[in-house]
Length: 214
Length: 190
Image 1 (cartoon, rainbow over the protein chains, first blue to last red):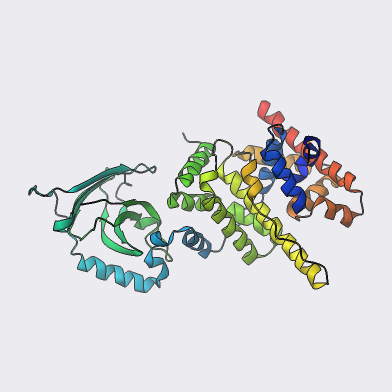
Image 2 (cartoon, rainbow over the protein chains, first blue to last red):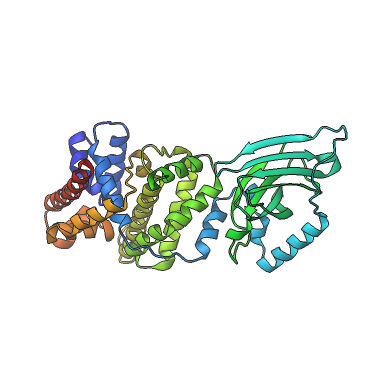
């Protein structure tokens, strides 16, 4: 296909009216040719034609289906594969076993903690200070929603372990210590409980961050 | 203040960095529009759901190839949704032909062209202008656009269905799109 033929077919291409062979030949030409500037306008028109259609609410399960399909196996929350009543019960059990405590500052005792600080694109600033041998981790969050309710997770293999829940203060900050045996190979994750639905009560992860060596 | 266009650009960058939360945000912002478009073409909820699922997955799997400066991720999603829906429509037609004794055709490679070239317009007003211009086309041109874009017919199929020379259908599509494009550009320059 040459430039003239491509120009003649730009409108049909943008509308999706080429047959498969024409479409392949068209794309092949355009990929190697910088001469078809009007094509962008035609595509913009086609996008607007599509965008002008009435919105329609998709089935509620579609969101979870897409997120499930998009998840790498290691990052797929186990709780997505559970029945939700079972999941809620399991989370309660894990949380109870973890003996969650918000104990304020860690006292210095000579052992070297693993310290990791990072920021997310959503504006969260996170500082983690993990003392693996003592099974306690101090975490500071800034940039949370004021008074928002959150759940902090450790991801171990394909298991999601609830480390604890907390509420941000009016400044969108929370700091505290979890008495939970986080391990160097774990990833940590935060979810916002308020955005959850009956199908997914903990909402989508605000971040998933790997930890590091002791 | 962040404009929707900028917000979608940022979303594209976050998708390229493999942030699953960005995919969820894209879904929350655009799923109604994508599903509405797929449903309009297919007239079938489960099929539209599959198309929208595949379109979001395509965006996710190709996120590292998306250049947000060349077009918004919303525009790309709608383009892929439209292409997928058209492919679905054509598969149905082929299946009917096959049942009637015809030969099956190879599966198309949906979506690839959306990476090659994509334009972005994140503007409600522009959307309205294009639809006003569409309403202002003559009946033949409007029908050509409807059959191509919303019924998923190729220009050859339109020519066969309307018993017109292929060149006439190509001309109608070209003139119609030229008018829609002119309306868009004129407003952009103003």
